[in-house]
Length: 88
Image (cartoon, rainbow, N blue to C red):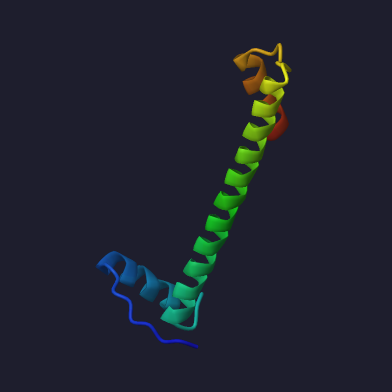
C-alpha cells in the first residue's frame, strides 16, 4: 500500500481524530480511505446520471427531428416526474 502525506485544515484533522477516538475507525488512514471510497461512489453516480441525461436528450432530439412532439405541458411533465420518482 502506498504511503501519502496529506495536509488537512484543523477542523478536518479534528474530525478524523474524533472518528478514530470514537471507535468507528482503527486509524486515521481508515477514515481517509472511507472518505475516498464515498467520493468515488459519488463521482460514479454523477457520471451515471450524466450519461442517462445525455441519452434522454439524444432521444428527445431524435424524436424532434422525426417530428414527434409531446402534447404535455411542462407542468404535466413535472407532475409526472414528481409522481413517478418522488412519490408525491
